Image (cartoon, rainbow, N blue to C red; front, side, top):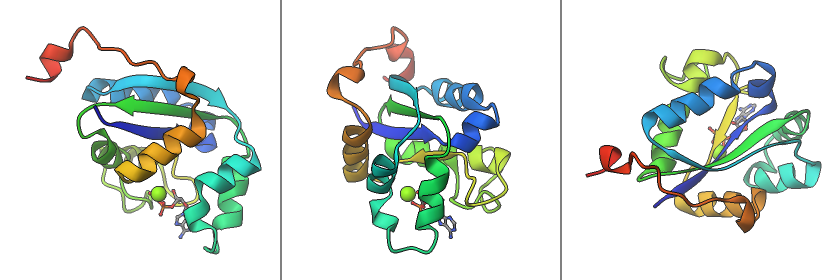
Amino acid sequence: MERTFIAIKPDGVQRGIVGEIIRRFEAKGFTLVGLKLMQANRELAEQHYAVHKERPFFAGLVEFITSGPLVAMVWEGDGVIASARKLIGATNPLNAEPGTIRGDYGVSVGRNLIHGSDAPETAQQEIKLWFKDEELVGWQPTITPWLYE
Ligand code: DAT
Ligand code: MG
């Protein structure tokens, strides 16, 4: 089964919507296999956003993501990588559809609440960057036959 890395950024934690965000992933039918509250250090943040290091917003992005606690998670399910991106919505919350997390809770690109891996390769890299193997728990919910045929 596919896995993706999801992080509720420091603004999502401060806004008090950790439970609401987790609820949406659970309600959809995805399975939580890793979860921790942590504060990322500069090195981790710079590695995570390495693809953006030449962009003008990089310094601010690293500053923001390291500024307070975030919730790092791994979610599992068929097609979870692309589906999570849909639950999250467009990068700029003003362009994100109502019903998406960013569409419902955000108003600016620099405070867009949540990160989700964008492809299978990045999902694998990000899970490895943020979690040790032993921090992930593979399990099968008893409701699986009611989610998949
Ligand atoms: P996403 O988080 O939707 O995958 P991304 O990978 O293009 O978006 O960018 C990573 C983060 O960088 C994004 O969540 C918020 C920030 N960011 C992107 N574009 C930005 C911009 N033009 N100005 C400020 N911050 C930006
Ligand atoms: Mg991205």
